[in-house]
Image 1 (cartoon, one colour):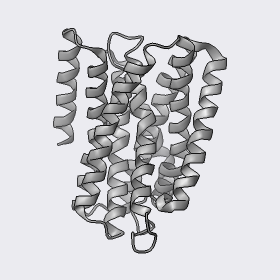
Image 2 (image 1 turned 90 degrees about the vertical axis):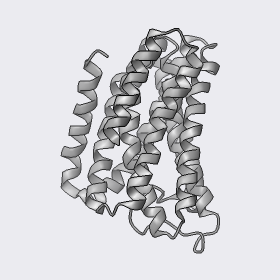
Image 3 (image 1 turned 30 degrees about the horizontal axis):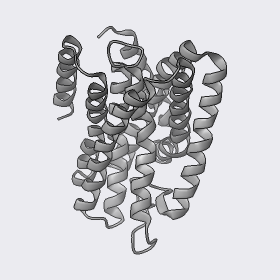
Length: 271
């Protein structure tokens, strides 16, 4: 299934870059492609009994992929477009905004939304935690999706590296969180409604990323890209890496490095 999705994504990439298509629609399609990995991960996590150590390893790999993408794509592009001031301000602002929002939804029951173990709150134990988890997952996904749309503003093609990086990192996110949701007693209907909705909103966020920000100056676009990068890095440090280390332990570092290297190699290839 994973291989076929990559093949489909690559065929779409070649097709839509050959024919003239409205870039906002193209951005939405690629946001949907990357967001669909959440549903794939949720299917695996809910129906296949994957050990927590394997989940932790996948989370480590996904973390490395995202760190590489935000280092060599997001921050670099933001710096080239808007300079150091816009990039630095946006980067810190993204981290602060994400942290404030994350603290709020964590108090509502979404603190362990990416955990595959029994840490997630059930609706019976914490009323409203289900909605908080959905909002938290949306909070994690929107910055990544906006970046996809923004990447089309200054380029003829979408940043295929960003799409691959986000796709690869979304699989362990959906996998880990859905496994935890199942253990918290949430139904398959709830789990897949959440992840399908988030995948669709990711497509919409990418659409808006291009449609809205294409009218702004390079400095604002750079700051927005940096905001997304700051939010993503903070999300990794607060949620994905702690989950990975809890079960992968000393192997977390080397698996993260492999993920980083994978994205770095993809970044240096020409598609």
